[in-house]
Image 1 (spheres, rainbow, N blue to C red):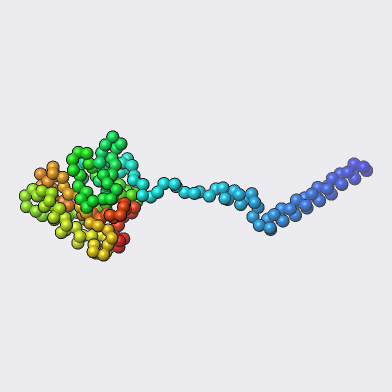
Image 2: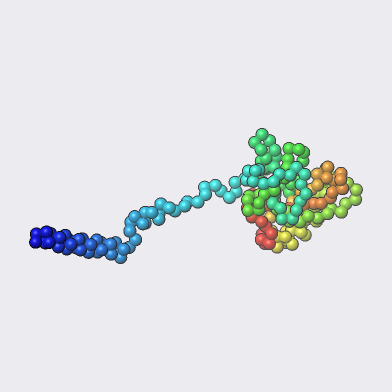
Length: 200
């Protein structure tokens, strides 16, 4: 009889403990999110990358051309080569992106990476013979602004972007190549996406 009472007492105690535990559980869930869950949520927040979007991409992220044939829609940098690899020749791009000499190259990049220029059109200069660079610059200044509005979606005169050009090198001109790559660039810094249809 003593054992039966003890077993019964144990069963009653177990039921009582279960009820208390159930009440504590209900109290916790009905009273709001447990502190431990809140702590876990807070600790898993990703602060995101610490690098900026205007950092210059490494040369290994693009394709280098010592002899470049422009293609509409290409996003490019003019880079100088040296002991540290290919790096930008200037922080603020100039209108003329033509490589001069074996120590400069064109680096084609993904348009979502920071870049100096975007090719907005490729136009033939249509000049007689083998024109020199100043003659091609004059042609670029006449031919590229009209192409700007078609590509960007706003007239060049109304845009804060500038027009530039990449010209055939001397060796290309000697072979009769007169294709001018018309460019858009931001004089205030690098582009970080395509300007096609942007209205900028």
